[in-house]
Length: 579
Image (cartoon, rainbow, N blue to C red):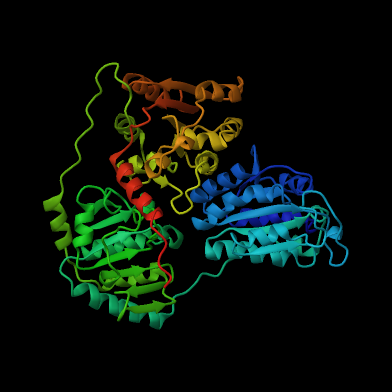
């Protein structure tokens, strides 16, 4: 047997590195500057390419894949591809998702200082070929341009390390003439990629725990609330260990739904200000102390900045710091990792079940949705009652920005069911590409996507349904056809919120073109919906199932009405006086 080291190219080295960090699939669109790179990536036996209809959707798919697998990757061509991709990467940055953005760039000779040439796929300024990188600096945590083989190994590792360390996207541009070239440093890349984990400052950690114990143990009815950043810190276990030790009632913020088990006996539901689950806002906002673990207090999460919580009663645990009773006299402890703090606090906290006792006294279950009269139009509440019945531990539930996010918040999620929503960025159209990424990311683990998408959002990125069929995925897509941008209607209505209606079933069937596995139908009544769901669970189990649900334009959740009014009020505030 030969012991010769295999000579590998730059592209093959990148493929190896992607695999080592858990990314065995990338989402791409070919263009002349990335074709050689795609050839090299395709030589890999494990890494798989998924070819999308456009770069924006490829970015959304990488976003969805990262939500399941921990890291995603998109590969596009220079500028015309990269700037199309950038909106999706901005969303991944806002949502703290490590997406590796790889761009095939011009020939290295055309980028060398002092010898820049005017090339295509640029804005026509030969003296500044870095316009794309400058744009990506705003939405990535690291940017590298590989113009030389000598430092390619180091530059790729630097970018990937930054993505995983900061849980943010990164940008890697590889000159097209280098992708297939060999360098000795690539032959040694089987040495495993390893990332050093961040450590808490031990003295700061101990001081933070001491102060937190003193703060919480002196209160009568403290509660605890899970926030979205727990996902980034991977602190769900430590959070539940604290809940068990403390006896506190706990809730989750809207974007943190599914990060904590809803089956837990101390779980109250979602804290979402005035549109919270029954009794949750009353218990949280009347508490004399609340521990928020990984919160994100943007205007959406805070319902137009109307939450009834104050900094002086809050113990806030961020990714790497702890703030106790913020404001004057508050305490801040830096270099304290969330999971370290929650684990240490669980070992010290004194049990106190008062908030749980209060919740049990107040709690009144929501009324069940009754069956619809025969032949009556399908209603939103009826639709989501049946969607709730489809959920199981293997479901990847997705809600597009719209009324779906409020209806999905009310669903009871089985343990293991993952909920996905782009709360911070909220770019409508995200859902279709993300459905593709979620479906491929969860496929090997037997996960199935259930996506709730409005017709307005669907029209922005609908093409990627064809890619879902091409790669034989089996998501269930509920297309909610209510004739427009309902979420915008409730914030600020106008003629621009009405869209051209499509025959969505025929549209999807046209993309199917008798190739692949598809079940598509339109439902107008509860009976038709039940029939479609029976098909989804039976003969449609291995098919892409597309169910167009006809809903009246004014039929939306009361939560959206309340939320829309408050966000509208926040958006409409007059300018603050400068004097």
